[in-house]
Each structure stands twice: as C-alpha cells, then as structure tokens.
Amino acid sequence: MERHYDLFQVLPDGTLLWRETIAGHAAAIDKLQRAALLESCEFRLLYLPDNAVIATMNAPKHSPAKSTDGLSP
Image (cartoon, rainbow, N blue to C red; front, side, top):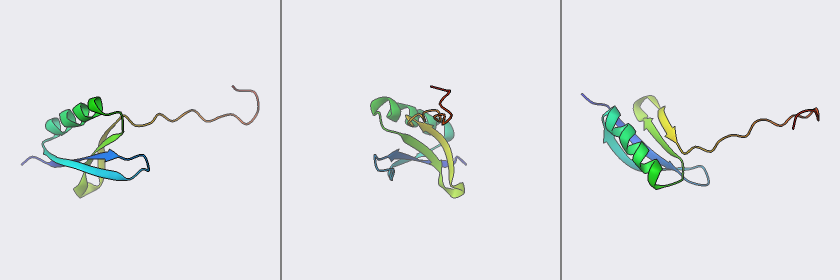
C-alpha cells in the first residue's frame, strides 16, 4: 500500500495552505518539484500520520549570523 503525502504552500504570514494529497513518494516529490517551479513561494511535503516534513522547496535562505565582535563582516 502506498503512503499518502500532503502538499502545502507556505503563505507570507507563515500559515500553511493545503494544496492536495498525493499517493506515493515518487509522485509526491514530482508534484512538489513542479509546484516549486511554477511559483516562487515555499512548498512543504508532509506525511501527516507522523507529522513529518518529507521535503521543502523554495524555502527562504537564512543569512549567516552577524558577528558582534566587530571583526567579521
């Protein structure tokens, strides 16, 4: 039996908008990649029974921590 995965879009305020449920890991990854190509917002693929994040695309990149010693740029 194939697992079912849920695709969510992350809205600008950080809330999740459910997009669809996809059967099968390979199909879910493919759908995530296609959605991320069409829109620049973040998408997350979740396996809800375990509350597991399977994959994320278009997530904002975190900037490195700034130094407070005045030595690092």
